[in-house]
Amino acid sequence: EATEQRKAENAEHKDLMTNNGLAKEVLGWAKNRLNKFYNPKMYKPPAKAELSSQDRIVVSMGGTLTTTLPGGIAGTNIGAAAAAASLVQIRAHSHREAPPPPPETFGPYAKKGEESSGVIAMIDLL
Image 1 (cartoon, one colour):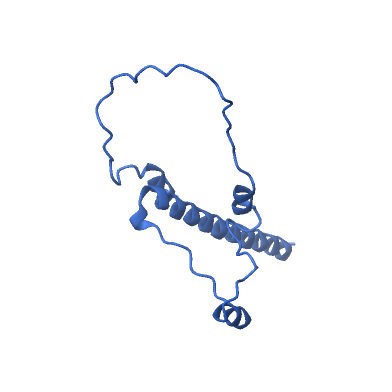
Image 2: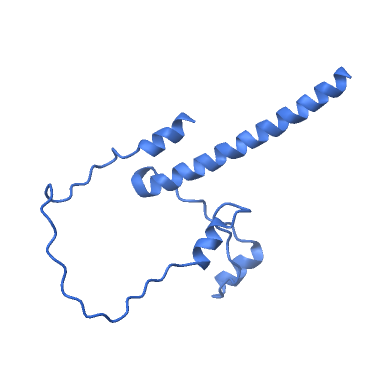
């Protein structure tokens, strides 16, 4: 009975460690995407896909590849869904008056720089 319990605990532990590793990979991917927007200097672009020998021959002879490279997170269709769906907003021809001038504000926009890394810092804590 103790052996069965140890085997069950071992299987549970291996499953937990696998899920933790996958979660860390997703957090790293998300952090890199946030860096693309907030800290472009810290962004690491994805590695170039290696072509097979047949694909290299086709490209070197002036041909084009018809296969699409996978995007987004595998199995979630994040990249594919974003490309397939788009929000289109159409304004009918309307005859409105011009809007009033905007109210007074604090002054011209000034970029804060890399100070807006609160979300990235929270990911680092995990």
